[in-house]
Length: 227
Image (cartoon, rainbow, N blue to C red; front, side, top):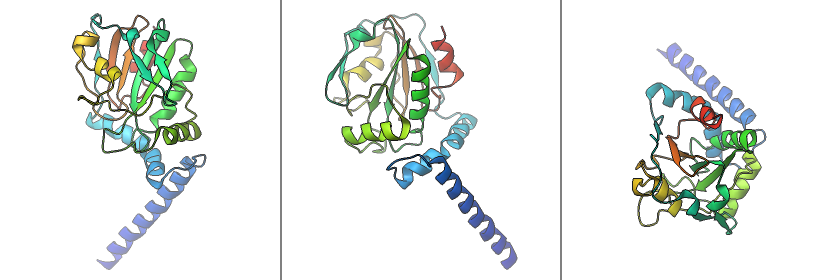
């Protein structure tokens, strides 16, 4: 019995050592990250694989030609620096809108979003909407969020001021449009967690909703951008 316990203890210690080394390697370029953020970044690939295996947060919805009663390009939002962002300037480009958070299992998708933005920036705009709606995983100020995203993920796509994306009186107007069929023409799907994604085409039509576990670099997303 004692030998078995010793073996278990040795395996546990070795696992901790290996995981610690892996976490340090993955975060070798991370700046001012908390221990939680570093661990979440390290386990992100395994978490995505796990959610695929159990079918969690992998829903994708597609618009069947419905047009919005309220024009997407009539919307406005506040950038993280406090200035106004007019959606009229988005005409002629696809737009991927994502609610984000700094302390989430999906936070590493910032890297994927940035890679997607760099690859398709001639035809795609990505808009990040930091929100503290899910388990308080975005407690930082706008300034702290901006610094975190820039230093650790090189984010250069527009980030909005922190707001609420969940349905209710405090919900920002953009996510109210995205999740209300009387405004966008077909979709009532709310954000299920951080890093839910909505894709709008060049004409301002909401074409897709993607759950958090659908990577920004997945075939589902990439194939739509190639059209």
